[in-house]
Image 1 (cartoon, each protein chain N blue to C red):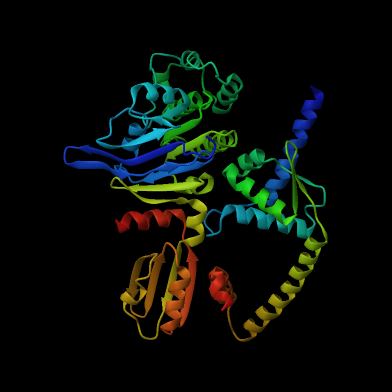
Image 2: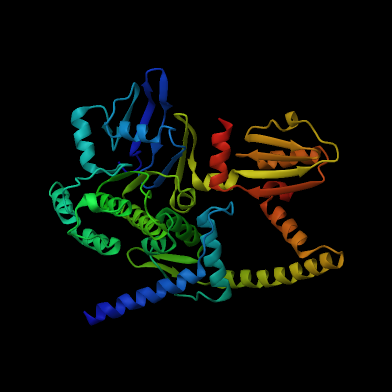
Length: 149
Length: 297
């Protein structure tokens, strides 16, 4: 009985912890499962999630974030496909951070520098931050096929 | 059985005299999903739900629920055992107490989930000894939901389940819906609470004047609906933007706002051909999709 109490308490803190990571916004024009995938990836890149860490089960996280279980299931299964998660039937999802993820973290780091330089340049050209933000957002919302042209 | 639709209708129609409440509805609701059924008051949502459950006879068309013909009396009895329905007006016996109501309802279902009943009783803080007629609107709703959830149904059909609930109650309701879905219960619910629908639904159906105008996975709506604001040096005619997927165009001087359900890329390409000077693309939330869709018709 005491043991159950302890376990329950542990589960609770885990959920609390993950809820701080994951914030899904229904109105951004991006499917929720993609948002969740990105946030899990980001957590792995920044080291907030480490190799071997366990993520909450589909049902637990669905209830916590109040989204359809299919959203969680799809994100987990896509991330398993990418090799970032390992799904063990009955026991949940485990993070496996391999070299690939780390190199991605480095690329993100490089990209940040480039973006910082670009923004600096735009500010020197007299653009306001709000204008820069809008320009970035508009470009990001561009359908990918046009952006490639 | 796994991939089959839990609700499938073919040209389902209901007329009252000359008025068509529901017109040729072809609905297909997936087994492992939460489906939201949206529409204005009087759009035909409740009429559709009542036809599905065999409570009113369709004028034309047919349908199956969990593979059972809804108009066949024998099959309908069978399907009602496996479908839990929470009606808009939450009909309950007013003279019974909460406890009597639960005992009465549970006696019909050998599979009754006592542990879920107990949990919901605690969560909802329902007064066991109070007569149903003395319950507030929110409490009646909670009791009706408890009776539906504890039955262990295969399909949950809820007509305006969040009506009368406060924000905490709505949040809890959504959590229970999500949990039921995780246990394999198909959920079909009508609602006016678009912000809530936007979080939990896998699939969205929008009914307007008895016709189904939108029937799509919510992720697809999120990905493809866009509002594209354009500024031109010389305003082109709206005809230039009659592209499949463009639902609505508004022009004001040099500015043009295009509302597209898909093909945003083609709209932007056309705009570039017409020497557009500014392009802004914004996602469209479910609220705007709903309002635009209803306005369209």
